[in-house]
Length: 339
Image 1 (cartoon, rainbow, N blue to C red):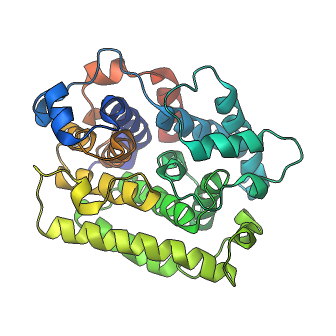
Image 2 (cartoon, rainbow, N blue to C red):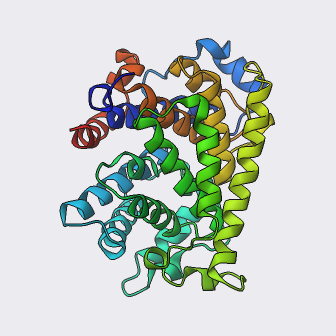
């Protein structure tokens, strides 16, 4: 087994995320027959010559930069993380580069986050569990030196700044945990079981220190009831993933088995499905994710984050990695955490 230090898991994961994003961005909102008509056989899909990414990679970099700033200032804690990530999200919201079909939840929440004096819990969209919550969370799983509590709290907090639904929080936590396990050389064959155990163990735990009174914006009787709903959604998605892996069907649209990925728990499950169908063929995994009827860029983003964390930077063809948009920013963050 390759050691984590040598395989450059953080660089591999961030590059994979961006490559999946760039491959899936042109196919988002298309059904599979339309994608095949446009791109040819899915196993031969090519990265566009100008490998532009969507808001998925832009917001991943925002989380990564905010996390780096927070960790540079001392021990990672809720207020220390919330401020720089909030600032990065507002910068993204105001940027002329924010023209890549961003999600409504992120736009609405960020328009509220930019108001001075507003607590972030009042900006959070409590009814939204869109995949915008967890397509950007990989940096939390890749940053070294965090305790389990810090990683879980940080993953949920970065989600909650925009997406306040308990499933958005749980799916983000679970996504960061999956990235972490793979970066630390967990065996892919046992990954779903490990994620199920983590979800069961987390089910009754509301991270008060990280989330404050967010739960009171929903209609739940207790914070434990609130967060438990999110973990139950994630466990149901993992059940569907397990069923799909029992009878693998690599030529079938993965969204038919585990969902279209517009919502957080489905993006996680379908991204994992594409990765686990092609554990040793990372480019094929990205192509399968991009040739899907759902939120293809976010699904492929997550597939790439998982595959890159597992296999490292060498997973990706140099001609692809060399022309991905924001390559310098991705490499800088990856090198920081791989060191």
